[in-house]
Length: 540
Image (cartoon, rainbow, N blue to C red; front, side):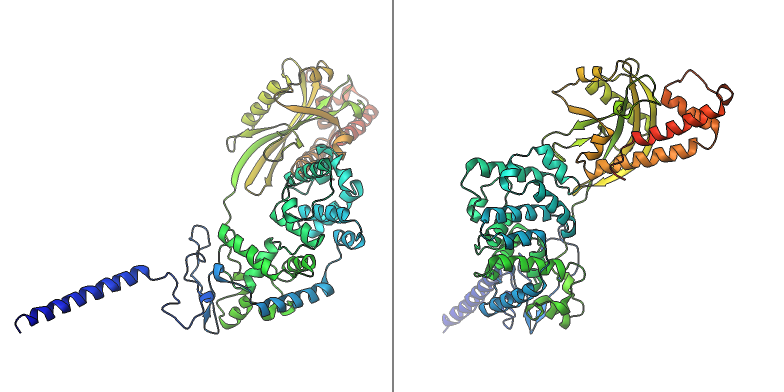
């Protein structure tokens, strides 16, 4: 008996130890999801899992939202799937809506009217899809029509030059898209065999990615593959009330998986277009028209918002904090080069503008612009002019003391041009030069290794495909000169001063008493007309 007591005590102690170990082990192995503790919730309705909620450094800080629907938490995106009956309902409802409400767009007309020629249809869809990336439909329509009029087939585009393509693309932005279109067209034509017909084959073409390949293959060649763009992400995120970071790699992969489950095998192209159309017209980012949406009955986000007033449909997809734009600064000089003896009465053909070509890689690759110099932040006028003078001397051998006289140098203001990741502040000046040795000397000094440049007359500049930033630079200069004319033509003495500038008579001071009134008026009219014509009118 005496020995039994210790055994009992030992057993009790061992039991306690085992219980403690088991408790600790269970705690360590307990799943991250709370469905184990809340068995009433379905697995796909959990937001406590690790993949849904992203760190506050990526997602805007706000309280985690437990989205309940009939006692269910919305689940981890990796566990979400569309049920078969749900998929059939979505397909039928969306295609019926699309048949009645699809927009009449030029690329869709080509796709409908060229049933016998898959290459033309594929080419039209390709061009439209590339143009529509990051660009509004209404903006694209005009560009698409002009593009197809100039290059109606793939073979026509393959014969174009990059400069011609950039001119046609001017104003659409993201110019790399245009270069990829040209390179892809040349690649397809050189290899022969016609337009690739499957996603796998399309992905091998330069510039065609996952989305574009899916669009062409499904719309033209009826391959049952999904497409996922911003509109599709928004629709699916609301259908399933997904709060995951839409930019996360895992989340993007699962959006493609969900979109693939929905694609109608009989009408894959129409379904993909319908899904994108719904996101573009009804299921918009900030003001969705839920009452008119054909998928409102299947929309979990709408159902959750009706049960919880703190939740709205626009909470989906999660808003991602955009990366802060980098601020850059540069000095831009609109250099006009004059030739001839009489600078007021000179023919307009003798006035040229200096343009430089950007490097073939990087931002705005291969495009033409006015000479510019990067700056280290906001600097004063003297520093900017010094930087421009150094550029002109180094790259074009233009030296103030040796090669030219300054007819007019005017600071015309500032302009901010916003890119996706860069906010560029440009300080713009108008610099009118008279070359002492004539324009032929400028040709002899071109350094082809360091910089490619040319100078064009007013008419050529107006017809060039310039970026919106360059056009706005020209517009600022033109408006500023008109302002200068208004200021300097208020009295005779001021107008004579302006005349001196344009005649480069810095050492000769004319006064009203030295000229007849008739001569002054005639000179004033000629000068006004010359000055305004010397500034390009392409941006008016």
